[in-house]
Image 1 (cartoon, rainbow, N blue to C red):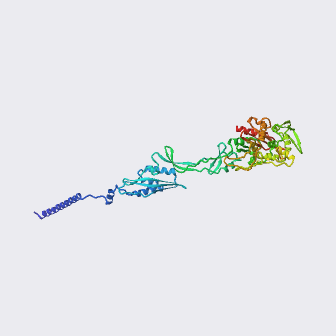
Image 2 (spheres, one colour):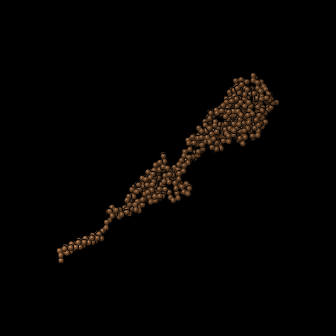
Image 3 (cartoon, rainbow, N blue to C red):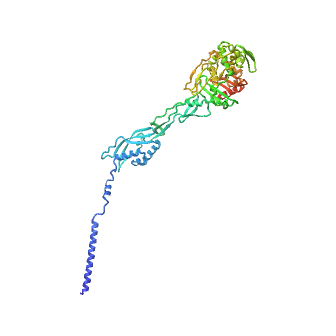
Length: 545
């Protein structure tokens, strides 16, 4: 064998041996891989998996988180720790939108006590809902329940213990009666606008509106209540007190009467005024002036010569003095001179006639002659019995009835007897005179049922016999005298008047009287005669129906 052959053989052996060693090593490595355990998760991950059924927070911590979220009105976070996140979110958001609290506080009464193996922990806590200056506080409960972790077991009773299935909360807001003032029949005259009353109809009784507004001082107090509701019906009041109904102030003014009065004066061609009073109560029913009469309350305190309406007073004086009865026959010449004063009628004379006829036809000469035989103070004394010397403090109004002074001479007595001379009366005072005849007693004017008028100077009415006589005579003015144009408006009684003023070339027109329980006075300034006042009266009575 050659050396080359030996060398090749040796080399081949070495290669084969190396391959064998490598194969052994591979096999050993594979064996080690198979026999050794494979890679495992990190220790921390293994620990977490082994304790997955245990809560990560204590019951107290979950309860505290829940109450803190409620107190900050973070209801989404609060709902997240409950067993029913969607229901809790819906309920809590709904209650927040309903109550609109300024602040919410939810605090447990005492921290919950968690037993080692407990799966439920009851919690007592208190809600406080703040609404400005008011707070609604009450106790409630919830239960902490453990599954994988502690959670608040959701139920509507968490919000309020009475929110059983089918029950909901609701807010009731009541502002009280918005009506501030009503008329004599209960119709609204003014309503509260904030803390101030405002007229329902701005055009209604402008001369009385300021007084009515000043008298209405107690605005209703609004109330907000939180109530428990079931099937749409209130079951229980949970918070707040319902505002007590405050009765509106009741005025004596009548919407219908005032409307009729205003329409009547507005139809007049000249400045016109109307005052109406209820004889039985003294209630002021209407006070109206048209635009031509101006804005000053002349109806209540303007003074004018009374004209022949004052014959009610003169007749009363003669009857009280026993100078005549309604059937006493007296002269009624067209013109008569008494002392230094010449008196005449309005273009007529009558044969000797009963006093009642002279009154109905408004015979100046008859009444002037009667008055000339009376004492100088007889006319003021008689006027006082019809309220012309009275003084009243009607809340909110400035009124005066008139001025009648003792005569300084026979001539002045004659002039005063027919409502000229120094006699001054207001429409308010003339209406009071007719109301006194209708009532048969003193009448105290008032504007409200519950706000009294202060009588500064009172008066005593004429005797019953004098009142009865005057009622008869005033009725005959309408049935057969100067006011017969009003006969178609029912049982009207009254007296016409024409009152000269200035240089005597101009005259105001009057009519005063009553029908039923409505007494009134109508004045048309500068009318020249009583006819325009009679026309206004007719329209007023027609408007009353």
